[in-house]
Image (cartoon, rainbow, N blue to C red):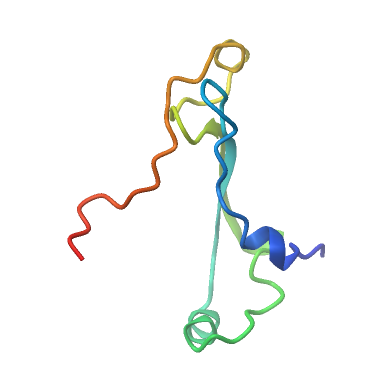
Length: 92
């Protein structure tokens, strides 16, 4: 099993620039109750957290900014989206 390096897990979204797509692939993994409890306590999760045995689904690629699925047509067009990471409806 190949583990994901910790610096990659904590990567920040960076806008590649106006008109440039930000291609992403989303994954969903099954996580045990024990793993969630360990994460809540600030402990290191199990090595199996992101392994292929717990992979439930894989979505993408798609552009995070314009929310379009990847296609050769979209890839050659300028991205019309913006990278706005402001919380929506957060009144805190």
